[in-house]
Length: 308
Ligand SMILES: [Zn+2]
Image (cartoon, rainbow, N blue to C red; front, side, top):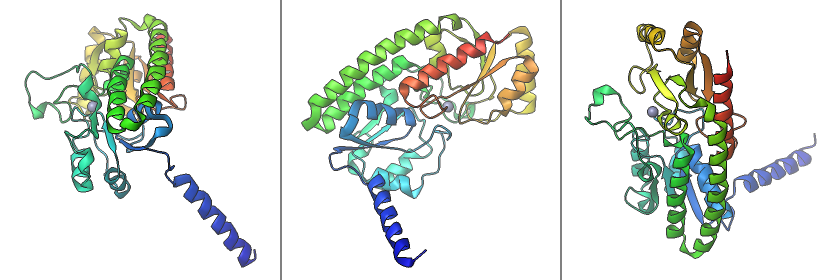
């Protein structure tokens, strides 16, 4: 290929790449979301008024990620940091925010939003003992598995967007009203579809689904991890298997980011259905947005329950 053509192609490619990564001029609010569900919610509530970057994917363990330089750059110029809170990101976010040195998004500032502050938390320990696990001392942080929690967080996040970008407040009010209406209708649909799951006894790999069970009336009879975040040993799995002989379960659930082997082992040995829960946006092909996340979660649970 002649060199001039090659150069022209390179220039065209560079221009295309620049266009793809350039921040649109009208994006008023730069949002740094810790998890995909809050990035998706900020997008629903901010539309073209926000530029959203998400720190983790559905296939990463949000309890522990590596704070890469690209994340630091995004935290440095963010107008709003939207995370779960309840200590979910305690292993990486405080250090990242400290290094970013961005006064707007430090804890206590309007630019720092913790979703878990706006819902009723489950599994709040009455006695704080770090030896009982590493990650859930402030109550269970996996609030996004109940769509009613998403609605509460949406109310608060919409208010926060109005606060930090008051010039566009009317548009945030409108986007929130549209989202809330669609979301309430979807909750009614999912709740009706999932009605057969009420009372279903289940096993969880990680204590990741307490809000999902609370919503759908499912019963957790065993957890594969001996403590939150601790991989189950063979001996511990044998103990769970013995428990299931007297307290049978229908299925075992694990999140998309987790190593499925403990769930596969218990499913095989206890004769359970195994359900991979997308857990957040991007956790399955169908979980393309928040609506797809719950469409797919309910469909997978019903499929698991229908297995003989
Ligand atoms: Zn957890």
